[in-house]
Length: 163
Image 1 (cartoon, rainbow, N blue to C red):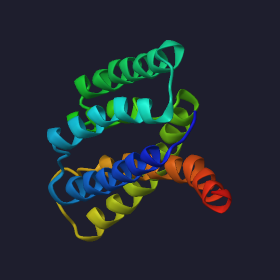
Image 2 (cartoon, helix red, strand yellow):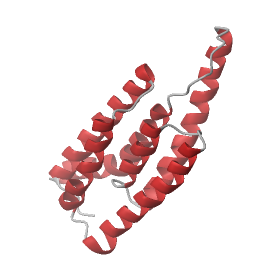
Image 3 (cartoon, rainbow, N blue to C red):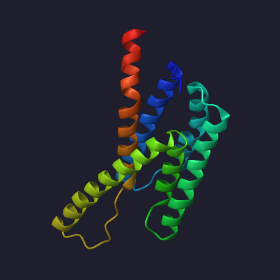
Image 4 (cartoon, helix red, strand yellow):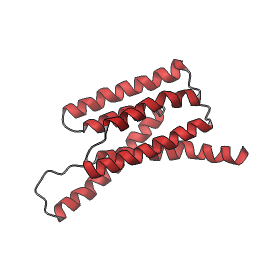
């Protein structure tokens, strides 16, 4: 993947969108459709800016996103995941290569576990009676930001040194 300045600008916009998604999920327990749509619609521009070939690169991105949607929509149907979380993960699958998406899911799972323990302890400490709602968009955003930092920041720093 040939990264250009536009690619890095788009990744920065994605990072800002992820922070907004985490914040809105934390404060309102909702990730807005317009935000998920903007993330998804930004992916083709990122593909173009990064020089991805339609076959097999873009086709693989679309396949991973379709598989992610199928799996996470199933979890939504079982009431194990929110709809905004499903849409956010599907949109993110359009951005990162499959091996990085697996990395995202692993970091997300660890962050989600820590978030659940912390919020569960807070819930018990405050002796709240209502059902605990975990803002999993925070864990998803953390996982995605981790992947972006681990896979794109080192390359950006090197390009800055030799540009």
